[in-house]
Image (cartoon, rainbow, N blue to C red; front, side, top):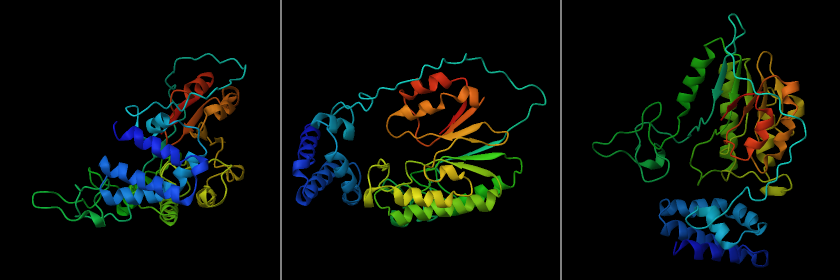
Length: 342
């Protein structure tokens, strides 16, 4: 911790609104690069690339925060550096509606309607995947053009993928969806995002949108008329995990991503959902489906409170798993939630 806490203190000092000049922003970025390189978090070139990509969003968020240096260090580097509790200011107010009794699950009776759901998640298509390239490299992501070639006695990336630090080639996605499309007995698809590759230090908005439109097109091509219920993954944006709240406008907003999603997914979503990318849909014989938004306080999930009376079964789909505070909101509708797909 000899380097971590003083570094967080310095970053916090330059993140103060009174110090928010271009020069100080570059100093913050410089300190972040030094920390990354000193701690050997990733190879040095990636340290510079990831800081360059993230610096504007991070500094903007930092200027608007009220974190002390020890809290900032805990947020960035974990509990060994400081303590930061995202839930400390959350107060979830539940309505007075009583919770319905929770009954033990019963197996369906003979001849009961059956439902087959396809759950797709974390495709992580890598446009730079090269079969035969090194599957064991120094970078966080291998099997790519820049990974080099395996030395003697080491294996290269497989034709269809690899069980190493590698993402999927497009041919594997084609093959997967082609096989699934031929099954013929599917009722609906839950698709919970994370489409782009894990090269989070070198991604542009064009890269992310290409991944979105390409994989969406393949789902439409191979799965035909099946209804797909998409949810937004944390890798869809760039920088990764960057989902500014609605009051952020201009170039740092997420409008570029959400607008593209509403256009790409318009044939699957009801018109009311195209502006919010959220909906509750009763899908034929399927349970009602609602995507989970795990950004910020889970107070919004209280809207599911009428679910036991409105929807006998409620499916929730999302990419980022919920944590402990959501249990308070799930508790009143526990009987209705038939599954959470992550």
